[in-house]
Each structure stands twice: as C-alpha cells, then as structure tokens.
Amino acid sequence: PYSSNELGGNLQDQALSVTNVNSDVSNIERLNRWRCALRMGMDRPLTGFGPGTYQFQYLVYQREAEMTYISVTDPFNTVLGRGGSAHSEYLLLLSESGIFGLICWISLQILLLFTFFQIWNSSLPTIEKNLSLVIYASLLTYTIHSLFNNYLGNAAFSLTYWMAFGGLLYFAIRAKEAHLHE
Image: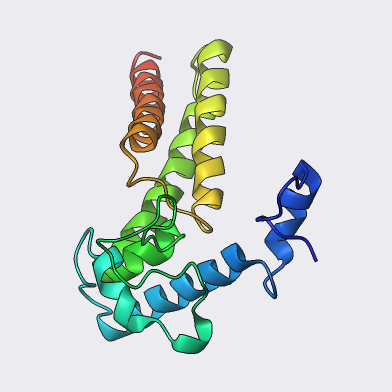
C-alpha cells in the first residue's frame, strides 16, 4: 500500500497513494472532512453555515470512528498544514453556502465552458484563440482538481484563478466585438 506520508517516497509512490483509502492517513482524513461537509450540507441545505465557517463548524460533525491522528479538534490550535479545510471546493460551498452556492459554482464552470466555445468559434485571430485555450485549460484543470481540494481560500492562488477567469472574459468580449464588426 502506497502512502503519501512515507519518508523518502518517490513521485510514483506519491501519485499512487491517492488510491489508498485504507492506510494513508491523509486520504482517510480527507474522507472525514468530506463526510463532515456532507453532513453540514444536509443540516442546512438552503443556506449553509455561512462563508468561511467550515473550519469552525465541522468539528462537531466528525465521527470518532472516522477521525485520524491528524484530525483537528480545536480550530484555534492547529499544526501548520493541518487546518480545517473541506478538501473540496464543491463540498465547501455546499457546507458554507448551501445547495444554491453549490449550484452557482457548477453553473459558473459550465458558463466558462460555453464562453470558451464562443471564443473558439469566433473570428478572433488564432493567437487569441490559442491564448484562450491555454487559459481555459488552466481553469478546467482547477475545476477538476477542486473536486478533491480547495485553494480559493489562499490569496495567491485565488488571485491567479480569478485573473485567469478575467482573461477568458476579456477574450469573450473581444470575440463579441469582432462579431459585431463583421
């Protein structure tokens, strides 16, 4: 069994550890956090607990049998790197903003896809279409990765994400203007 916590583990061991939900404490803890977020979403399906509250509210949703030695029990006394994140942008939104927040996030991802296709099928120069492809590919990569982790709470990462988002919108506006001038 592969473990992401093994000292001296190589890249292959790290990559293969994602399938180990039996003994890899990081993966077991991730499942604990996901279950807590789901329970929170079921308790307050419409409103959630409010933005930024997961790390404080999920503690009571933990089940003893699902906790690990890295489980957080005090949100104000955490070890660096073991804070209280839901480890999923989707589940974080469900727990903090309810089903409507989750639907908004999914709708935003679908909107990005349609926006990219509008750019790609426009009369913009190839270089601009290719730049929009690179931007969309980076946003899609995060969209998929955000099923398993959430980084939009990190200022540096959030800035990068929303700048890429803005870049795609810039090309969408350019594509619309090019269409109007045809």
